[in-house]
Length: 343
Ligand code: UDP
Ligand code: MG
Image (tube, rainbow, N blue to C red; front, side, top):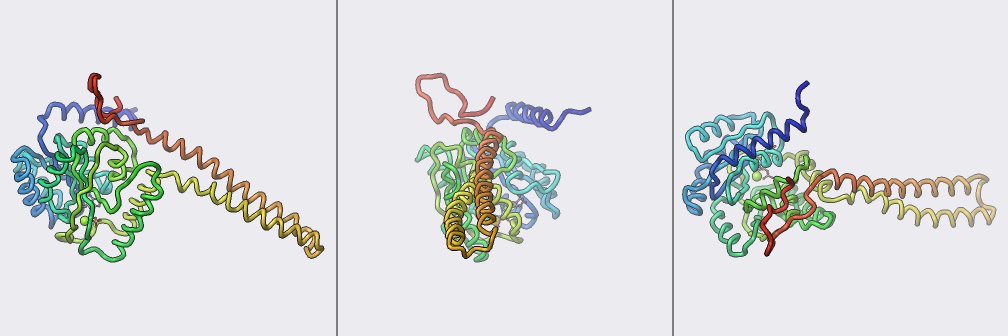
């Protein structure tokens, strides 16, 4: 019988790490997940090369990940990989979703700085130079794009995104996930190393990057219209991302049973009082009072117990995520260690 999935993954990671260690680092890696983006890739490639050249010269690479596209995306990406040694083309076996495609691309990066960008050119690559400037000036590890305007998106999408980011900000436990921020961001190698050390399966990368800490600064920009094609985030994919985000960064939904139990207990006390006065006043049908009391007490106790179980499941869940316990930002007077990577 062959190796199980865990062994396979461990082996795969070791191999990837080994292969990457053999490669020369570059100054900048640009990672782009692409799903059915045949009309955007060539324009994207031109603009990325222009922006990267202006910012760091020729010392960059572009990692293009084809997330199981059904159009000619892979053919175009492969051709770029064959003709330009700075392009790394990766093809996933099927459509794994934006966040996984992005993770696959990040696994291949060798850059000292890493830029994440969408394939549809909604986020202008020309901001790269200014973002690198900002990163150096602020001595930050992450510069994330904040969308001040969003053009060419439906009112429903904009409203849903707005409500979602605010809800997430209220519910996320202890992590400040910035509002109106997509995955368009620049980060340093050490931030990426920490991100890669988080082994969770349901990935909400913008939240995970926020979780890392270090110094993270916002860069405000106007989001353009998509260059071509339609959004690859239909309603259901958006909902799935939102659920991954909420459940990945909050156990509040589990805790709700406790609150419901408490609220129900208060209502139960009032209703029990009402039932008893009816009984004492002789107005109640025989058996009604006792039935009311039993069902109210049972209902609220059950809710509350569910909440208690939820608290424990929440803790098991947090433990199972297996994130590093803490991330060291700086150390003085001790030999340097890696920034929180699990080894
Ligand atoms: N994408 C992907 N896999 C998917 C869906 C989207 O790789 O299953 C990519 C897509 O090609 C684009 C990025 O993720 O580069 C963001 O998608 P899109 O621009 O359609 O989202 P929107 O900007 O409409 O929220
Ligand atoms: Mg887009």
